[in-house]
Image (cartoon, rainbow over the protein chains, first blue to last red):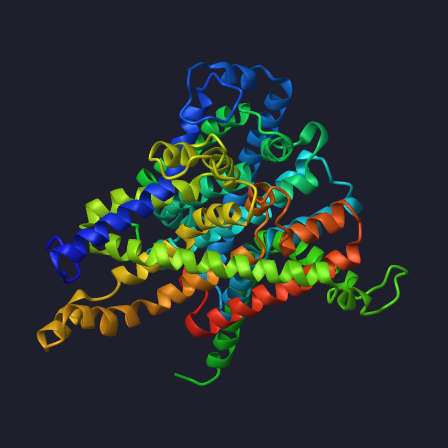
Length: 270
Length: 293
């Protein structure tokens, strides 16, 4: 394959483009690269680069009961969200894929819309709903709200891989006597499991990193880590946040790596 | 064959098909129910609140109040920020996507990680990072000082520029990813053909390549603009409380003033603008293609 998939222009223009593109990539990576050393700083102040190194902010994070409680709440919520959103999102994608066009259009509308509805509005609405259901400041409330925010990502990823899947395989299994459920579980599901995994990682990250809804509906002993971080950042900037951020970045990197390597084998990618 | 069994068969088949359609609809039910109850029902409810006055009688009072100065300012700031963020994203993102689209697949995938990693990193973490970078003693100030460009540290954080920088960083992948996908789908031979037929490379780029990349660009632009309209976290923190976009105004109207009617009216107008733009996009290109490559 040629080194350029598009015809080149003058070498000078090409170098300028490469320089500009690299600059934009540096802009994109800079924040991540800055948080890591900050978290090992020995200073109370936000000076960069740090003058001395230490693990004091990690000790502060792991030694603080309040931060640990928040971390636990967030992790438990994210796991529960993943466990709930992945199967219901997968089933919805399957139903949409096999069902009538009208069903698909309606469900697609319902599923895609939350992505563009301002989160603040969703958060205020859920807060209002939970006031009646008495779910504000509960773990169940956080999980339910995050499931609604995470499900669209599962549906989108699974639907994309079902589009590249040959449904005739399932028909063949059924013509040889398998029930629809068995054909789905043993033939279809294993072949879309990678995109299901990608959807699951997206659901996990969506819940773990969500701020706005958590600010409204989580609180007290069920405050999420993002809620505590947001309040801490708004009042005064505690360097413990750098240590927490580094941990969150590590989780994101792991999830992204898992989604890239497990979630997209050559065969299934669109 | 006699004619008699056929209608009976047709009935059985039709019943089977209906049962099957009901099954498929049923499978989507858990997900759609969650979305209806948690997202849509509360928003309808809020919308209805916006048409009631404080005593609970139907009125347009909440909408009349939106003509007041603080709300008009919030709308103006929101549009100003969203437009600036979108334009900056295009200026940074279009050349980047073009550069990436020209790379060999293996190199491109490696470079794409630099776009995907921030995309997967929590918005709050990235906003914090910008707070660190833009501090008085942060990297940006200390670099500028050591280069002798400035004597005194600049006030970079807690203002409009800081909010815009932080938002561009969050939004850029939303523009680059669909744009990159649409550029990859362009047949390079068409550009070569234009050059072969006598066009200059620059002419071929502007008159063949750019027009064909417009659907992807337009999708990214609408997505970035719509997401910017309702953005909360980054302007709230990097603006230092001074930047009041509609989203921040809605939050403070509820948490400080408990004025649900006014907040709902703001929300309805915000939602109408966002949905209007998305409907436009959907009519032009099909919304689902935005997300599925």
